[in-house]
Length: 280
Image (cartoon, rainbow, N blue to C red; front, side, top):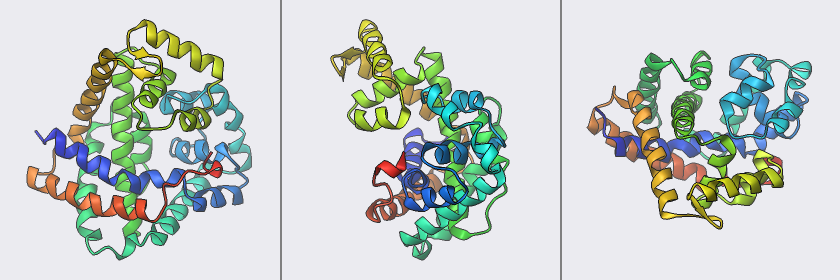
């Protein structure tokens, strides 16, 4: 069994490589060129792996977005463009942004890609119960060196994400509840979570009150019980992500975690994760 701590490090340190696609102007520009503006670009680009995804499918798979927000974007996006064009635009945006960060010049690119791809391909042996991952796993591997690494991390991210949704469901934590608990840790500003997920203020307040009654919140902060509860979900998520990394020895996994820091830092230092209103 792979080391759960190392697996989490490898994912977390490399995650900026994937996550930047939701913030960089290159993505918004390419989606706009297809006629998709604002949040429509996000929902269509991440959901395009399903094909012409219905709003219901995206609400289920993405988990924590206000359903009204999703329905404002889908299925209207598919009357403007096609999933195939959106997938291509997303890849083109990722390539352009990562080139801007100098990722293609990092000497360890080939080594890192080889390790991450092995893990991503092992994850494909564990498709059941992971619909968003499975949809992305069905996409062809890019032949561009940087995009190969980006796609590998995208698969590992969605593999982990599907497991996280399963853990949340098992603990009776809905999408809005998960957002509030996440914000209460201080790791993500509540103002960003509210703006990006689109929940009405009254629904947010009602969910907060429900979490207080469960003993998980005190004001806007996690209680001791809340911290323990949320850590249990994170630990279970880590465990559910492990099958992907089982193909790597502990030494290889430690190496991937070490290399991942280089790429994650390059993305952060280039400002690719900078939030702007256009990201919404």
